[in-house]
Length: 114
Image 1 (cartoon, rainbow, N blue to C red):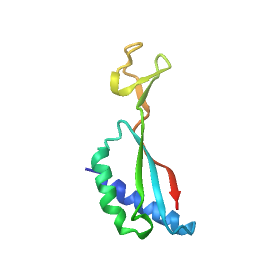
Image 2: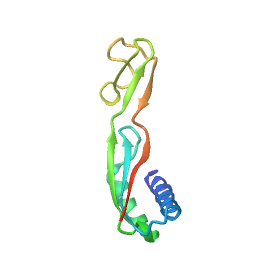
Image 3: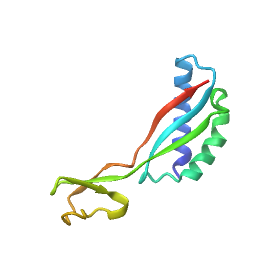
Image 4: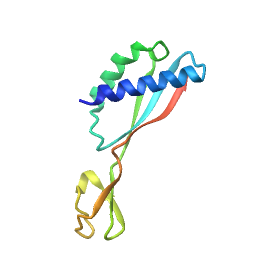
């Protein structure tokens, strides 16, 4: 249930950026959300719709989410693979010497001003 904390931080950051750039209204915010970030997107959108009202500049802002597929890297065979499909063990060589390359992030991709 960390969605509210992420939304709170994101909204505050965007409101500060809007003020620094003399924006009076944000039309939409696009976030990149990793497939294994643990963010429940439906709940995240609900939190956004509730919390954005605390900032005048964000009150009508639409939230757009772009999913980032999770990719794991294998050190032993120097390859990458789909994390969700195969988990921690490399499907190519069976190694457990793997680490997540991408897919657990939550990044502001774009802010559209009106």
